[in-house]
Amino acid sequence: MNAPATHTIDVTLGARSYHVHIGHGLLDDSALWRGAIRGRHALVISNTTVAPLYLERVAKGMDGLQWDTFLIDDGEAHKSFDNVGRALAALAKLGATRDACVIALGGGVVGDLAGFTAACWMRGIDFIQLPTTLLAMVDSSVGGKTGVNLPAGKNLVGAFHQPRGVFADIDTLATLPEREFRAGLAEVVKGAAIGDAEFFAWLEAHADALAARDQDVMAEAIARKVAYKAGVVARDETEQGERTLLNLGHTFGHALETAGRYTTLLHGEAVAVGMVLAAQLSQQLGMSTLDDDTLRLQRLLDTLGLPTDVPPGMDPQQLLTLMRLDKKNTAGTLRLILWRGIGRAEIVAGVNEADVLAVLQAAV
Figure: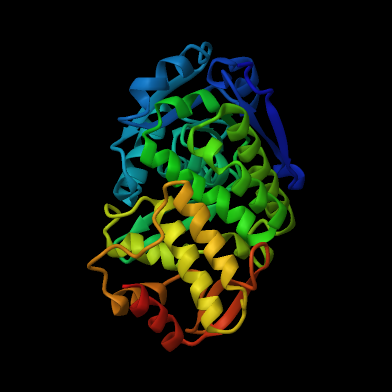
């Protein structure tokens, strides 16, 4: 099979604009990604799973730079202030100046931590994304959201800090564990569920090929999801309005992740369950009157091997308490992303907690 052509998508943000490149062999194409590095210092941030697989390929393109690596352990629990402090210490040891660059080599945890580190060093230096997971390729590497977790909740501390470029090498998906790959598919489904009914139907038609990692279908799905998100980010960079829609399923999902101490569900799995809960709440509130749309969402997620049920042992009241800490809430009331059916998501403020609790109780 011939390798799919490289897709290039623009994220248009004036002086902060950049390209997202999606294709094969991009880690080895240092002529491409080195163009986004302006200074002479670079710190590669990765984790102990990804670095043994891909750091050597990146290192071959680092000639002429003063650079070092900083590795964290794999997993959401390591997206912490402690590791940001250690990464900043690594930049200090390197003697990184204001034209230095942080290189994020890994999944969403690495990308978020690396971006936040770059945002903090000398009040903001460059960083580039070399995502190695599907979830990072289609979501977290694009849009400039960076941050770390607290025991009280996920991503409660962070900054908007756009990368200088994103270089998604599809070859890295070959080493991605099956569970991680399927978790990434949840974010692809989410984009379609929010605002693109035609893309949702395309995903339904190609679900088996996606689950089987067909390269052409994967490249098309990644490019379509990134293009959708790039358009939203260009219109609402700092999430004052439309970009909030990209959080469909996230308020429920983040609560599930936190309640499970970031070990029970992967982020994409939590988003999958969260989308189903949001669809069920939309029905309960009379926003969505089409039972078939909720069933279509569940069927697609099932076909892609994603969970649609709340894990056993979760406490509905605890989940509601965690949802109160969500960053989208205003004036002490829940503000959720719900829908009127596939492709028609809305921001809904002042959601009654009793309705949310009823959905959680029914799910548990």
